[in-house]
Length: 293
Image 1 (cartoon, rainbow, N blue to C red):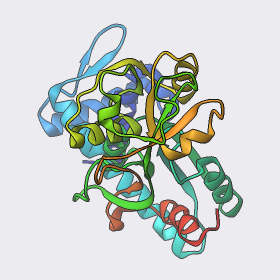
Image 2: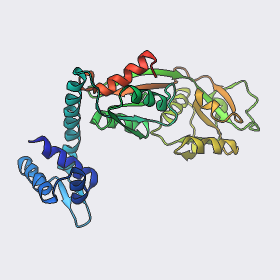
Image 3: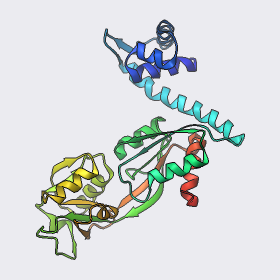
Image 4: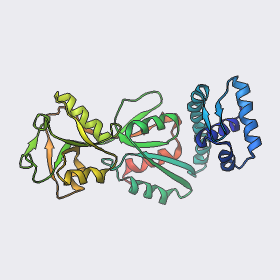
């Protein structure tokens, strides 16, 4: 099995189209098709279902995709490791993050990294913590800043970065706004504004209420921080968020959430095993550890 066959396969799987993949790879469409056929013959299984409009992965193709991405990520890491030994960090740094992650100023970290390593192309993807973990484990991201959702595994390790308590945001006219602090029991029956279930703040809040034995229903579910703040600002519901959110809309009332035991918001850097971590990812982590960002 040749690396170029895997590269061609991954490109077609990503683009779901032979012509677009061939253009991106700068190869002929006939050559790309021949490469995929050779791979299918070697594996003795069809990898794509072809139609006139697009191609989709077969079950065998889906099984191969995860392994192919992991192999290609390791090859890139090998090239970058050799360059690093020669004193140059180059290649691509693919970073994932949630919105408004606690304890990490992502834009500042990336800017500091670029100043030190201008030959590295930076790519950024923003999504929920669960998806970020899957992408790092699959080799599609070099590292990600996320909420801790698991302990270390063979494919993923978590480096602690920051921990914050949870706070309740509400409108100043809300009936609970004058309280010194609140417990999950105090919020029983309230209308909640929250993020989608894959987001770190939502997971931390769900864990806190589960630990307290209080059920809650999220009536207003959003996909960005500003929408959450706007809904609370209109007194349409309350939100439970990491502490640093309280500075994002000064007009809102922020109250500490007590009575949640060990439930807190913990920011981590998600990385592949040390042997598979790229030099660029190690350099970025070095900035965080030394405060160079």
